[in-house]
Image (cartoon, rainbow, N blue to C red; front, top):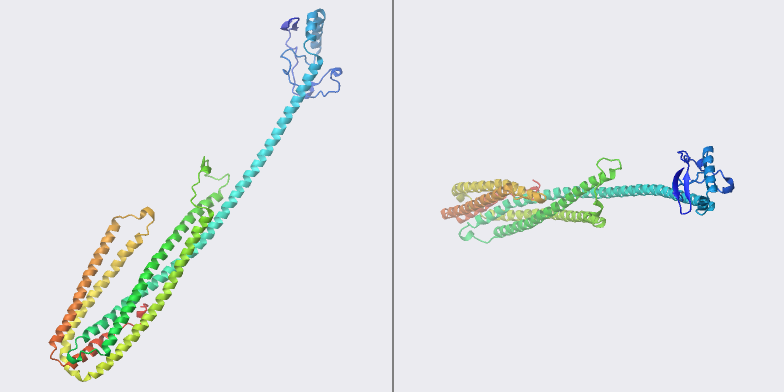
Length: 489
């Protein structure tokens, strides 16, 4: 026997054999109770765990072989022959304690299994619920992205429509502005003609130097032409300012359009992302970052304000174009009516001095030759000034175009300095040419005055007839036509 334990009154031993305790099976049948008189109607299929109430090696197995029964008889014999051992065993646990321990183990096993089963089922439900919630949330987010893409597409179409309208309006206003510029340039000829007629008539001598109807109508014609020019210049300034406003509105629309194209591309990429898409990754803490600069209301209001502003500018531009059209027609009619009035007055005045025609022929040839050369010089100077306008426009247009460079690209670089220098040089050249033109015109006047001095001995009537018939009426034959006065040609 092997000593396995002792108390104050007893000592416990077991046979020296390795097969005293049977192998415990995990099957339910291994826990079957072979003592029905002890178990009664209790369930014998309950799982049983060792070491719950007893130490290893101290439990008595419920299934025993014949060899184990023999060993058990030896133990019983010992207890019968050794009262101290028998007394110790009876005072330790009772069979009821043993059965209660088993039943407690059964109940704990059932409770543990039930808890584990509940946890497993709850966990499975949690996994399914969370999977459905995640899928629904992702679908809802994708639907929101799709709605956002629809909103962006709508505003893109609105912006594109407004940009197209604005481009058309800018082109129309630019064309009207060019017509106005051409019409304004065409008025210089009639104004110069009227002024020269007045200047020429100032050369009348003696009694013919009268404030007659021709002079009154010529003065009125100058006033009419200058009034038309002043109105044209004001309209031209308005057109230039309106073009700048239109381009600014177009720039805002195009910038908004560019931002929406970029946003649509990004949102479309986000809308196309799936759980198995390439390029997805973790971005820890990104949900706490809020880089937004606007809300849906302010976002849509910003684009709506841009569209409304562009529409307002287009309406103002259209109204200005109509005003310019009316102005061109009005000024053309006013100048033509006054031109015809002056021509009638000239015709009547010339008929009164027809008798002095022969006395002017000799001196006319010499005077006209010099005046012709001076006029050619004036025309050459004008052409030179005119030739400088396109280079000036090119330089100024380059400067103006470069002002629309975005953000940091608006650099004051060498081309900028060179363009500014070029504009100043051309303006200085034009200024000098205009000074020379004024000198040429003054020279022409001096020539006329010299001619008057040289022709002092000519008959006053012949001189007056020459001025009115040959000079004034000769120049007035080149009055611009109506299409040229409205800027079409």
